[in-house]
Length: 384
Image (cartoon, rainbow, N blue to C red; front, side, top):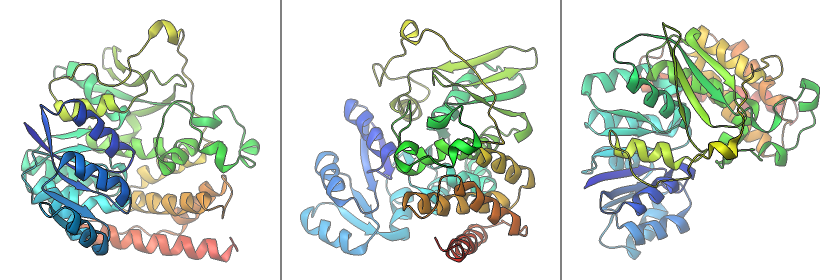
């Protein structure tokens, strides 16, 4: 039995992780769950999986649930997340928390010698140097759950020690592929939340629509695979069948294909190096018919261009990029700004930033907090 702690158990990745575990209860055991405020769903998960430890965002929720499940230990807040990640007998921690709340639990799990199935890209974007250094020191497995990074990881199984020429990171193009910059000015929240291929949470769906998600994935890939960002090429592939690929020095390309179903990379991370049978949807090549590939228009999808700018600047700039984007997306989802103003807001934050050292978690979180405050003040000054 492999014991699993799921951080972010009520979110999209967390619930699909539990779907895989449910299908393979003879192989996996849930030892810890952590979520934010979706207590009604968490309650059902506790009843089904009976974890030894559960973490909630609020202390009040933890106390309420403790009365209902006397055989389970309940904790809360950031300290509780660290406990769920590091202080249980879990063999693997699934990092599916949103945003920067994942950085301390992820580092704590690595330091405790836990293998990581990683789906919290923002943490790696902001703290990649710290996290990957800890992974190397502790010798743990750090397995990507994002479909693109899982695809790269799988394609690299055929590398046999040969160096890469480049990584080919595919993107669906989102709901606004082919739009002009002027057309983007009038898109609605409902349109932006309607992804053509994937079922995801609201924030990542908006990031896909702006293509910021792909920019964050470039940063993530550069850390995961120790590759210079200049050798990571984004290719728009609307059919979402090729999840990503790698090209070697001789020009050979190895790609990983599959149906657009997150259960596939989740299952691979949980069971690596083995593969589980009959998990998720199967790719129908005959139904797919044809595949196409396009170059992204950086003048239209400015968030991707801004991500490359932050990557090239390095150091603290990716922290600012991520924080500003999260604030801008939240403002868009709350009907405070238009879709195109997401990029405007991120650009403002990058323009005003002065590079700062990021040698500790406190450094990173301090820069993030200051960036968020600056963005909020900027939005307030705009009267939105």
